[in-house]
Length: 473
Image (cartoon, rainbow, N blue to C red; front, top):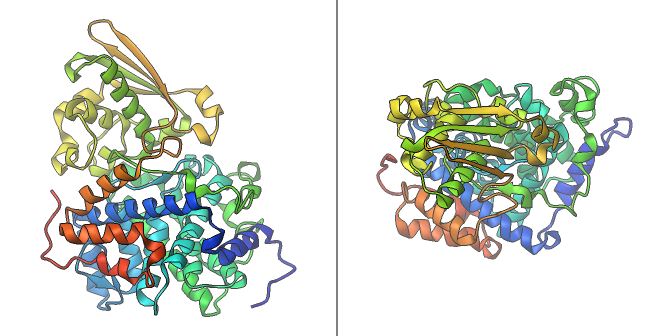
């Protein structure tokens, strides 16, 4: 498939050449070590998410229209076609606000990269573990760069980046998994990009918010599969002045920067910029929760002692999570900052056990959330996307004490990345809700030793539930 020399697609093609040319031995050791932990974390999130009510509705619906059995729905005994499995599994990773985030690129990377890649590994004649890792890194490098190119304004104007930007991570990982050359990878990106969609209004309680990552994963898989067969996409999907991704999804040309797509590609590794979550809520809330934990460790206090909490943050933080809480569903509870603050103060943690369905209209949490105010701090906004989760938290206690804590990076972030033991503990805790202990251990060991696998299909086999399903509590 010839490259059109008349089309200005230097950035699209630059990404495609990087993706198709990426080899295991060209990836730094620290990146390889990190990607295995990131993979393990996402799989644990999906396994836990598999038996949540909204996940079951999605999978049951897909099974009614798809009787094929090419690929597994992770953490269950169900099977679907590869594209529908990618849709389901991406949704499962995002199922309970537990999965990773690239803060600067504003993207949950594992949820969009891994489902199409595992589907390809599962339905192929076998992908060696080293190639699987290379494909995963290709996806983790691509999507965040598109997010960085678009900037915070992309989310600020109402697009959900996991659904829009995510298609490029999905296509990149899938294209590398299929060993497409650069020409076909250009078209994989172009086919994926034209399927981009996703609205941030889904955050206010809709189940469909969970599905955004799944649709991006599916779109990326379609992009790679179709390109492999010779189907063509938009060859200059990023650069096109009319109808290109960047010009269409940004209000003006000065709000995106194409150079960020390929700047220092292969030298600066965005995989190392992916953060993990140790709270079961949107990443924008984690710095505030950590700040409150720190203050409580410094000077113990209880929820009954709190007069008010004032959180100063970026414009994106205020718009994204600082709205007045309304009990519209579990999604709204996990995304709303005042509600999550109230949850931490009352429950002592903000993990899976703190979010039963009944919590959504909990009078005690709602009353305490009324004492939490989120304010825009222009100085934090001016620091740019690298500080978009930075907060200054003021805690006012009824006895007159006032504590202030400024925090830029939460526990598990790229600046304070978690230890392998912490990541494994989280994975085992989540995966144990659906899989037996011996299988959880085997999956853990397979992922942590992926480079030694002759065939990555083992990962897919270990994700299948072989015992009667039981609901997560």
